[in-house]
Amino acid sequence: MGTESNIKLLDENGLRLDGRNEMELRPIKIETNVLERADGSAFIEWGGNKIIVSVYGPREAYPKHTQDIDKAVIKARYNMAAFSVDERKRPGPDRRSVEISKVISEALSSAVMVEQFPRTQVDVFIEVIQADAGTRIAGLTAASVALAAAGIPMRDMVVGCTAGKIEGKIVLDLSKEEDNFGQADLPMAVLSRSGEVVLVQMDGDLSVEEFNQATDMILDATKRIAQIQRDALVARYSVETQGGE
Ligand code: CDP
Image 1 (cartoon, helix red, strand yellow):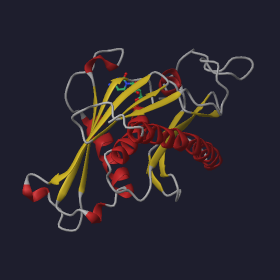
Image 2: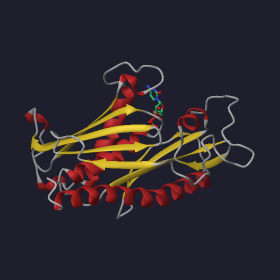
Image 3: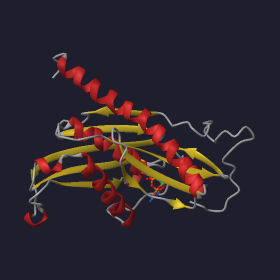
Image 4: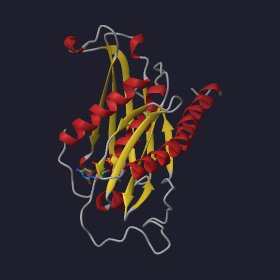
């Protein structure tokens, strides 16, 4: 982010390197229940991102001192596979993945009816198998679908998107080059019905006007992405009711 470079991120017509205009999302595809042994799962392809999410629980929280007597604990673990990025990533947790796991756990806890099953934990494993910018938001959006597919009571779905600034212009859903060489990156997630913001982070600088423009773009995009989440869940439900499982 903010790295000085000669890379031109917008062409003479104001189009981006991948041909998108400023409001355009990359293609998004979500599939549920892709894993047999998880209670719920989802696979998301968002541009070049490929992420698989598995959900286990609720089950008794262990070790016992991690139990909360009033509510369930949502434990998300975000992990990037060594082969998911251009330069092999050293396996195992690092500061970035610990931070992302924490913000995703908090965002999901706002959506799950955690007070309905105290002393338990719900594990959410987010495995990034191919990364192309926006993985925390893509992982979180898929995690919400996987939780719903697991039948875990939720008051709302979590849906997110990023916006950012490239060559002085606010654009939606940054690509890898835009993330690396742009001026700002703003990942944000909301509860889809209430609109409550459950995750917001920012890298780089935006003025108040730019920030407002970026959040308006994100909020508009989350409505489109929420529909993709619903379609994925409905597709699963219709397969089951046709006697497929
Ligand atoms: O993925 P997200 O945008 O949520 O997080 P980021 O920290 O802004 O990373 C942006 C992108 O940089 C990732 O999606 C990866 O494509 C890439 N990256 C990488 O190549 N190697 C890393 N160790 C971390 C990130």
